[in-house]
Structure formats: structure tokens, C-alpha cells
Image (tube, rainbow, N blue to C red):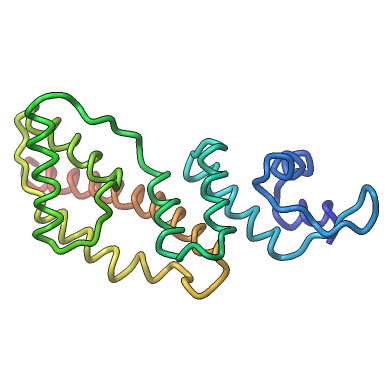
Length: 205
């Protein structure tokens, strides 16, 4: 297909497609003339992935390039490819000085060990959860994550992971992971707030 058809089918404007091509976010089409190239379904899939990363994941171009490189590296196992995208979705958390941080980080590591979860030692989610524990304790909130652990485990194992096409194109798997992580997370947060409102009404009105 010509770039005009690619634009029409993907919903991405031609100048934006050309920008993605220049930045290396979209692979080049097959040259049929000096100023003409042909594109195929792989370009449509890649555009969907890039849009998911930009519009849903809210990732900077530099992070998207890293993910695209992982997608294109066929020697990289799918688990590691998905991990590259997964880690990019979270915030960057810097370890804090002091005993509060060391205690929280040790508690996170112990929780992971107790659960038997296979989490990389350098996974940024370890620091993200540690930072949350520090803030909860500073504010005097009760720290009991067991109900949340079980809810997260069931949601991921019984629902979310089944939406990822592990046997399909690599960029389709990453797109599904990004969309699921962000959108299921937003839906769950909204449902929690609705449940809080309903329970407040039940108890207080």
C-alpha cells in the first residue's frame, strides 16, 4: 500500500508517519521508486504499537525507541521484550537515604520471596513499591498488602495475561501488554473509587 493508504487505514497523518520513519519508530517501506515506497500490514501493526506507547503509555520517544529495538531483536526472548516495555511504563524512583527506605525495600524483597514471585533483582517496581510503603508509614496508614497481592495475582493470572498474543507478532504482544497494563489499571482504580462511594453510602446514610 502507498503511504496515503497507510495513513487512511491507521488513522495516523502522513506528516506523523514521516516523522516516525525519520525517528526510527517505524521501519522503512520497500522502495519502488526514488520517492515512493510500499507498506504492508507490519507497518500497520507498528503504528498501532507506537500510538499505544505514545497516547496510552505516555512514554517519551527515547523510551519508545528502546522498546522498538527490543521488539525488533528476534534473539531477545519474549519475556525480556515484554519486560522492557513493562519497566518503561512505571515511574522512575530514586532510592532515598535513611533507615525508612532500607526497611521498606527489605520488606518488599521479603514479600516477593514469601510469594515465590520471579521478579528481577533490579526491577524498578521493587523501588516503586518501597517508596509507597515509606509514604504509607509516614502518614500513619495501615500497611497490609495481602488483600491487594491476592487481587493482583488473580487479575493478572486469570484475566490480563490471557489478552496478550504470545504466539503472534512481537509488536502485537507489546501493544496488548501496554494497553492492558494502563487501561485495566485505570478501570480498576475507577472501580475501587466507586466501591468506596457505595460502601460509604451503605455505612453512613
